[in-house]
Amino acid sequence: MRMLGLAYANLKEHFLTTALSVMLLAIGIGMVSFIVTVSNQLNDRFNRDIRGIDMVVGAKGSPLQLILSAVYQIDNPTGNIPVSEARRIITHPLVKYSIPLSYGDSYGGYRIVGTDSVYLRHFGATFSSGTSWSGSMEVVLGKTVAKSLEMSIGSHFHGTHGLETEGEAHEEAHYTVVGILNETGTVADRLILTSTTSVWDIHHHPEESDEHQHGHADEESNHYEDDQQITALLVKFKSPMGIMQVPRFINEKTSMQAALPAIEINRLYDLMGIGFSTLQAIGFLIMCIAALSVFISLLNSLKERKYELALMRSLGASPTKLFALVLQESLLLCLVGYAFGIILGRIAVMTLSTFGEEQFHFSITQVAISEIEIWLLPITLFVGVVAALIPALRAYKTDISTILRNE
Amino acid sequence: MLSTKDLSFNYPQGATFSFPNLNITEGQSLLVLGKSGSGKTTLLHLLAGLMNPADGLVEISGVNLVELNGSKRDKFRGENIGIVFQSAQFVRSITVFQNLSLARSLAGLSANNELAESLLNELGITHRMHAKPSDLSIGERQRASIARALVTNPKVVLADEPTSALDDENAALVANLLQRTVTGHGAALIVVTHDQRLKNRFQNSITL
Figure 1 (tube, rainbow over the protein chains, first blue to last red):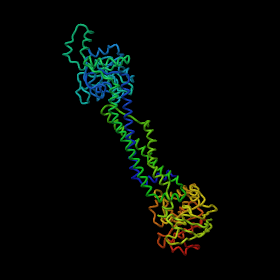
Figure 2 (figure 1 turned 45 degrees about the horizontal axis):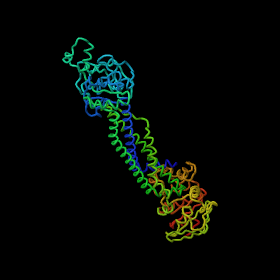
Figure 3 (figure 1 turned 60 degrees about the vertical axis):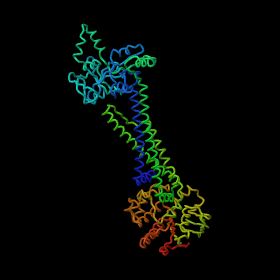
Figure 4 (figure 1 turned 60 degrees about the horizontal axis):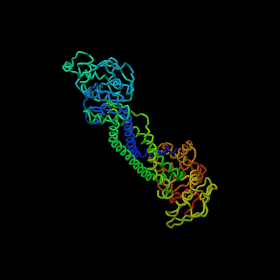
């Protein structure tokens, strides 16, 4: 009979108190694991999507909303900006490149974004099949979209007005899938991408076009573009000087607003950080309560088992052996709590991921043990040692003769 | 096998005990009778090395127990002394058989399932070997307690009031079993009790 086996049997004997302590530990560990996983994955996703974008230009409104809608595609746009005004930024000498974005329609809950080929290059997108759009009403699907909507090259669909699935369908024209992207791990996976002209064309009214009838096709095209609007412009500067000068110029001298993703996202992290930190603190607090529960349960159990301990001493067990037995019980309990906690954390992440997938097409996956979870193991074991210390010392100091005399 | 010389013990509260010299060889049994407060249990705890005497020595197989330090004495006790307690204490979370295995393990001995099974068989409780101690009757528990005391092949078995909680029939049964099995295994047996029913069942006896 090994001591570890005895420790297990003792824990099993006090099933209810053991289960309560394990449950408390599991909740605490699961909560910390969940919060850290979600926070890390959000940070990772946010940083990946924002990489290389120095500034976002859009209609005046909330700068955070502009960033969330234009970069992450998870909020409504602040409005539209005229192409004629956006051109002043596109051609600005400090701008390295810019990406126009036009959106407002969707299909199957996924946004249809009108842009140009720079967008694909920016996110390092490559094609798993087909090619990029070459004409109006041709679309390229992100990996998640293609998989979720089960569409392939040549598929047709009607976009719906608005970003909700229940929006009014644009029955007058349909999109054709001409390309499907490989997974990029960015927002591009969750988008239906097309040319900006596709978005303009589908919202173009014949009576408006009559006013643009001119003799030459090129002139007609330029006038047509100048009269159009886009939703936002993603900008990359040639040098840090751009960040110093251009946003101020836009905010002060134009009807548009310039938002700096780094600043806005930091603000968002700060806001979310308070929530994350609070939940994380609650998780650690629950772990402390669990430690108290382990301590009380061990202490009560030892009170009940004082004759057993004295008996074991009379059978030849050294005080150190009894100390080790109590410690093993505590550590075993904490290990089980840790394992359940990690499983609980995973279940919570999966639940949130399912919800996020349904609501925002934003999933979180975590299978491997994360760094914080590796750290949680020694922390949990430390909690186990601390909780067991006093009961183990009591076991160590068992006065066998006195106890056995009073049996 | 076991001998004591000038053994005495002083309790901090003031009670003082001086015990007669004992000398017992393997296969022999000795009954120590005494009323409550006569120092029976104190003597048994001194013989088991659970307490340190104020004076005197306890020698088992040539080793003076008093001179052994804590861990050496624990090890010696586990290997050489079996104890049968009045209320037959067990580790409750494990089965009778596992309790026997634990006794060997704590004594630092390798597992010996055959010996454990044969002892339980000898004491007529093989059918209860996988039961938890709490599921056993008082008589069964006392028999299991004897099996546990012998599973380490001790040189001496000390029994503290082994029959006090039993009726006449079971008291006689346990006393006989104790003597037969303990001496049959070549160990020396010392029983301390106030139970006068045992007086005529032992050839050697002293009264405190």
